[in-house]
Length: 149
Length: 149
DNA sequence: CATCGATTGTAGCCAAGGCTACACTTTGGA
DNA sequence: TCCAAAGTGTAGCCTTGGCTACAATCGATG
Image (cartoon, rainbow over the protein chains, first blue to last red):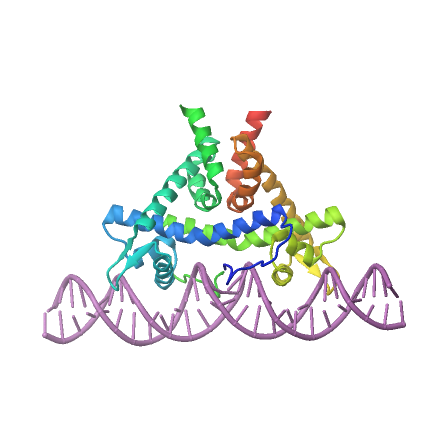
């Protein structure tokens, strides 16, 4: 779903809207990896290991799909694993997981702060968080501090 | 990217988290169609017609990609078109476009209300809006009314 | 120590959403 | 009127992220 090679060799006067949509698509591309990284960190933290079957179960996909995505995580340098040995995060993977987790918590907190019920906040945050830019995240943080602190 | 046939024939005790992620994936599946519907409505409203090339330009994709997605819109009963004649929305397509547009405006307004700068609000809303449930949308609306009204 | 169930891995299929390349209309201007 | 540019459509390829089916491995238990 990404660009094979390098797209748009000549794109004169690319409209701002196109840039917006493009960013949205790119965000979706990394969303899955982010979810996996966060989940793997979570599983290791709580149970000591992250097995493909557990990952699959938690994400609601088949184990084959999970394994395929884990392979992609490895390709991107975010995780390591050896056959029948469980999955581990690299330093980069850990960093990503930490960032993602912090962002997730912040998004949920923001949603609840504006009146979204807990369960809906959790559910929607899962999708929303991948599209929240740093600028927006900072604004969320400031809003919460202003309101609570 | 959807289920071919019907997935998970037996899913006993599907964990709530899996349901959450599943919903996120389903939301992404319809996100593109929503964007197209909204854009087509917009183009028709402002210029009287929606041509594949204009759509492609606004979305930052090749015209071939746009045409393929338009075909999918037609398959799903959201749009009509005849060769070399431009694209039109069905009643269902119009309804979708209206809903999407209203939601988009509400999300942008909410983001700005919590302090996100205008440009970032616009950009992020593009990705966020597809993951905002009705419950959350209602909460956004109430928050804005409370704060402005 | 053999074997059975669960886990893991592999292969192959599918649809979506990208792309380029090429062919065919349409249309406006010379 | 005719012809070239712009727009449209088709074909074919790729990657991602799903799936099922089958093979291989591990581990616990008899």
